[in-house]
Length: 312
Image (cartoon, rainbow, N blue to C red; front, side):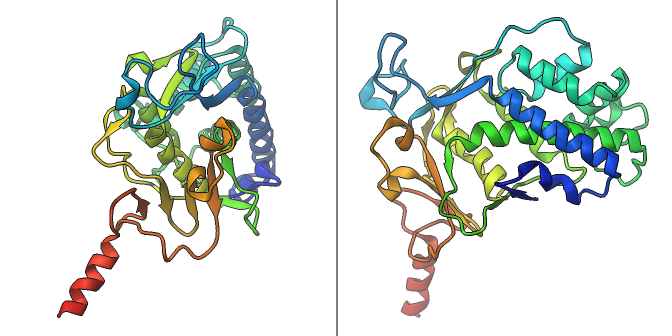
């Protein structure tokens, strides 16, 4: 799915919905951006009493660090009373819970009855047994236009939300074509399902209703799915609590390339150190594995193959 960086809400104009549904989708995208304004993301600090930014998990000796950490935290008001369906969607798909998220969902989905809100949760889970008609959003037998249009509105809301939050970490200024590719599309629940699972896989100590802690290895896959159209392989994190890995990676090469800023010499501030850059140039000389992952200290498998061919 191609997303315009200059006019993101227009990206869903290619959906084969009615003009009315597309209008609601564009409105929902903007509501998602408003909800994202109450969420902050950045490098985690070394401690609550320090202005030093973290390069390790606070519970581990500094000499044993494996990766920098990111904090995603709530900057909005506490959640007020709302419907069960809206609360379930906010809890399942929101990065943190606050009233801005609730209000955005209410404004976007106010026309949806409660049973359709419940169906959204079921189809994102892939739990067809819990659906009254047995059909999920990706099933071609799903012909209920109210559900299809409603899902597209929900999808637009959260794409606006995720793009705004995670986009703060990614520099796209050098791209000639100001567009990015996302791993989502019309009637596709895959990215929403991925985000729900990825959040739930974080250990309880790194996940509360108003705060998430993620390592760089854990944050790269959603960035790849949002901006490269790449279903990047799992982050190889062995210990999610500390971000410890047998094998780390520092960039992903697809049609374009997503790299940590330090590889490009952008290290003058904590924000730059924790950021990423998408480049659209020839990266043939950069070592990567067969999945396009740039791994530090690992020779490319392609060069090993070339050497073997030359020996023969």
